[in-house]
Length: 178
Image 1 (cartoon, helix red, strand yellow):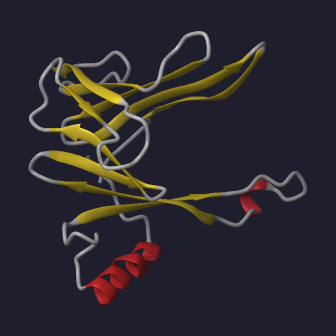
Image 2 (cartoon, rainbow, N blue to C red):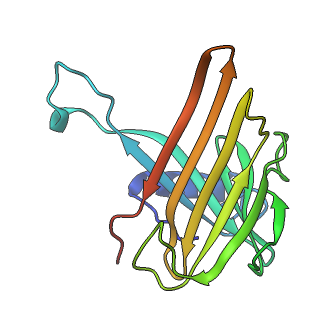
């Protein structure tokens, strides 16, 4: 997984972790990469390019010899395990208290139609509690060699009688580089 420091705001987080805990980045002393996503809150009165940027979302990723862990909203998810092999399965929620989500590999070292232009990718399918009558929890991520996450989709729907609520989104890489 590749990520990046997106500005001086991360220096503060990294420095605080080092100063308070004497660790490089995470509490277990492992090197971690932090990513801060900035966003603008829509306001119909203010032109979009004049809206202030807010640091609303911070994630960090740690790679061990066995897996890649993502810390997001104080929950740790096991995103990848090593080595990737077609059909290999694991519980992505092993390191948190949420219900089990089954992750599995497919299309290891293949090109992906979901993220064209990458020769060597791996697809991770994710499935939570699924009952077509009351809920759907599925996801899919594609990682490209030497790039990282290039595609992600997730659908979480809850059905209560005739009402359906939830989220569904797809993210696809548009560009990358140095």
